[in-house]
Amino acid sequence: MTRKSFALSLAALTVTASIALLGWLVWPGSHTGMERSSPEVAMLEPDPPVESPTLHTETLEIRKRDTVVASLLRHDVPSATAHEIVGTLRTAGANLRQVRPGDQLQLSHDAEGRLATLAYAPSPWVRFEVTDSGS
Image 1 (cartoon, rainbow, N blue to C red):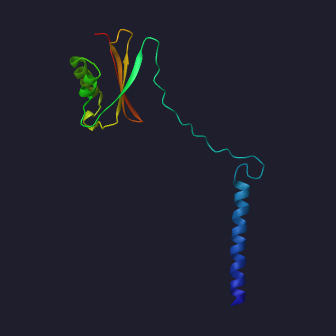
Image 2: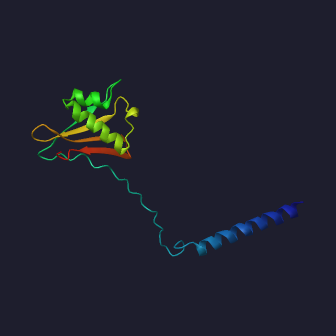
């Protein structure tokens, strides 16, 4: 029985050594001293809001039992403008029924105090931005 186990061990060792030798010969750069570099993954950071000299940006937070319109009205946005913004966001695909307390809206006002842009990011991958076209 010991001869049989010795023969099996020797066969297993031979197969393992053959696989290792074949891998060493076939694997690119492993025996030439060249290192294989792993691909680098670049993490893109979102651009911070750029504050131009003529725009003043403020961040407002949605409160408990609050709507986007109520938040805008609380920050002195005219009612017609607030409803127009909400309609534009809905048309663009924003689901405003899922706005949660703590969600943020960024408002940018021009030098005269008029609302120039509104940005809403429901997730790190999605961002909606409404810009005043002047009409």
